[in-house]
Length: 163
Image (cartoon, rainbow, N blue to C red):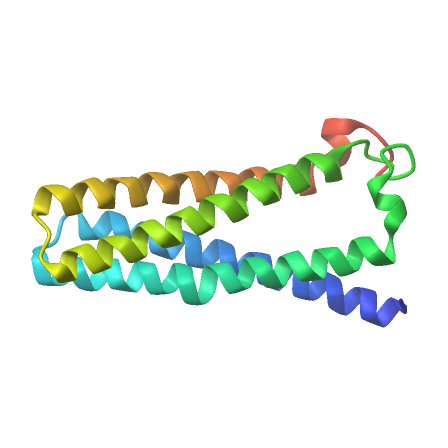
């Protein structure tokens, strides 16, 4: 892979991750804001949060994932803890990425279910329980994003090696 293609893959990886992170934070704020609103506004904010997760966060995650796979294909030695210069950081990052993908998908299904249930006329107690789960998963998502960012930026500090 040429240097130009590698630069494009890195850029796509970073942009996809940033888009997904931004959408995750926006959806979390929408879910938290919905808690204080009346029923019509609450429903609108929940629909907006579900749309942000489905239409922006998950495509951004998959964009970052596919660009990351391209980078690993270009540099397979990065998977070797001895030659990467920073130990097993990439293996740990990949574990957190898989956890993030799983949590984001569960969050999407829960957010979509919340909007369907509210539209179908479910009780406020049932909707609040679903909304609470969506907020919790949103916090987990954001924490996983922060851990991945910290791990990627501080890999040499955490695992040794030359900068």
